[in-house]
Image (cartoon, rainbow, N blue to C red):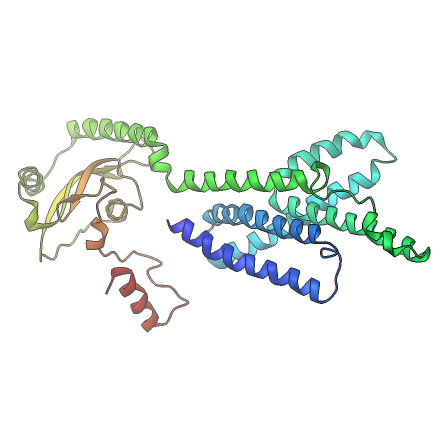
Length: 343
């Protein structure tokens, strides 16, 4: 739902801007994309398909960055650069291959591979539309010289929606939008789609826990806490119960080893440990920033392994870094988090 809402909002803004551009062209008598209603409709279609394809593509690309400003700059520049280079490459090959047949193979390969790039499809579609307008302009100039402008509508102009014109680019944008949306959903729901990987991780983690238990020596108070957790029957008295929580990053060593503790409602509880003891990993698992290797945790009696339960409405978390948005004032920070919590 998060990505759907973002997509609808971004696409609405993008579509309005696209319509404004076409309207400005029309009002300023720029006939390149407005000399016929077919061309106007084709341009709008290309813009719509490009937006549907590029937005999920950008959503995927931004996941590789942690700094928003850097992501915006590199993705924007990269999109522009890739679009220009791929479009100019194919245009250059088309112009050169008329005198050199050895470039036919290079043209076929480039024009086929580049169909995966949304910016290339937009650039080539605009180039094809401008090509049709060039034919139209030459024909109009000739008819004007011979005094036959009445025959302007009979000019044998190519159909802009033909496969070799913008047809294949529209289809590539449509299929690209489906592809990138599917990839975005795959990344977002990777724990569900690749559940077998999570099960494999859990089995490996359990094997490591069982292996370490043979040589592990625990203090009496730690063992007592584990027994107390195992004997809990009524979870209504507890705000948080952690049962055998474990995590392994490498599959060879445990970052969190069979951790168990309970926190009663109204109790102030502190989790202490040296650097590398697994405190951050523990909190990351409790907040689902990391998948649980093995074990479980219950928030007000609700397991965090059950994604259908609204457990996180009862949980607040202040991370070690990036707790505050540097773009917001103190009042805006409070208002933001209050709205998230429904206050």
